[in-house]
Amino acid sequence: MNIIFMGTPDFAVPSLKLVAANFNVITVFSQPARPNGRGMKTKKSPVEITARELNLNVINPITLKDEDIFSEFNLLKPDIVVVVAYGLLLPEKYLKVPKYGCINGHASLLPRWRGAAPIQRAIEAGDTKTGSCIMLMEKGMDTGPIISSEIVDINKHDDSTIIHDKLSQFTAELLVQAIKDYRDGVVQTITQKSYGIKYANKIQKNESEIDWKLTAVEIFNKVRAFSPFPGTHTKYSDEIIKIIKTDLSEIIHSSEPGTIIETNQKIIIACGSKSALEIKALQKSGKKVISAIDFLNSKNIHIGEKFGN
Image (cartoon, helix red, strand yellow):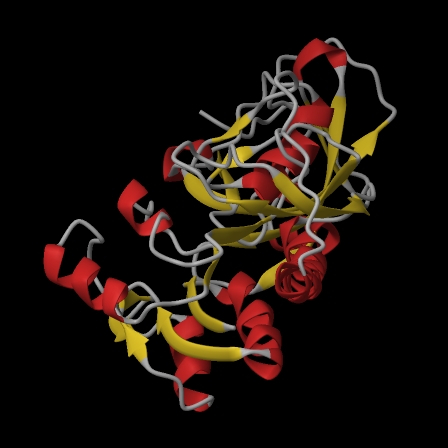
């Protein structure tokens, strides 16, 4: 089984390692190095770094629409192509090149959360379960038949980092088994359901600001979903404050959303529908993450003041 592996972020690294340990990976496609971090230094993708550590050939096309790139892909004559969080949509002609087609490792229980940000959108929506799916790729986005899947619980305080790491490993293990089943001719695919479809749109930075008119549950889920990236923030006294960790409060109030309603060893904020949220950890701009108690000790905060615009 000669395999082309296509992936870019940390999520795909366990899959590359496990696939390379079990099969012959002839080439790795990964998105090109880009400026990253505070210093905006050009940085190779985690998959490219791992591939070079494994002494694998790496190709970094900016686009797959370039005919020279397609010719190079075609000449490799792969038996199968494995795609995990690559970040570029494969044109239909690519899908026809490998002998056994292309398979994709996706971090959701399809057809729920097709698209770019399935982990974050599942947590944001308050889902209690998610999972990994291995599917055959076809022209539509994440629409292909399912080869295998694994369910993962989303616990109350799980954030995107926790679920990311679980699904990253499950996806790698499922991929290896799926490729072996191909080799042995025992694959039985399941057509995706035509109902329950949800799209996980790419997260935009302007979604990071907390709208205190949302319910406490909605904000609590959003903080977990957007941790660590892009994070969530609010304004307090003309200062941007990152909200790192929260919990639900049982307080029922009649205050305007965003109002501070308790400051006794904890910070409770009024949210929409008379619900309330406890801020447990936060971060001032350019400073380290601190607890709510440390924040209270560093600021002269009063009940009735407001978070947000």
